[in-house]
Image (cartoon, rainbow, N blue to C red; front, side):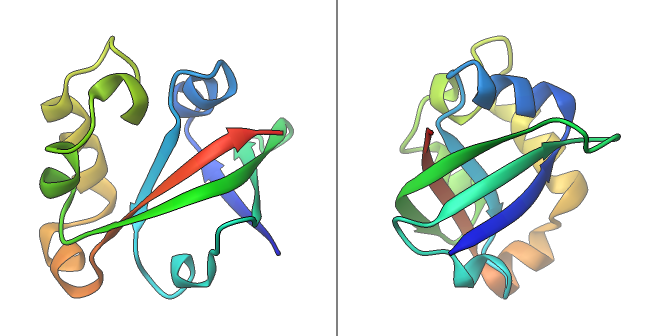
Length: 113
């Protein structure tokens, strides 16, 4: 199955250059459809005219971003130019603590194809 996701330019570039190897999302209804072996087509915001494909090679379920970040280094969650606190702050602009409690969070291990 193929899925589509939009990324802000910075995070699009982190994945595209191979730094970011785990995409982090809320485990909502849309993300519950993702299975190992699926393909995700990532689009670069805001124009959405650049894209690349990545294969899902692992799925990591957690209750919160903070819990996930205890298990992984920032170098594969984003880029070493960021701190974990900065990344959590960005994520929580999109996914509140209440939404994290309701759905949980998902780390999607990906490989470029």
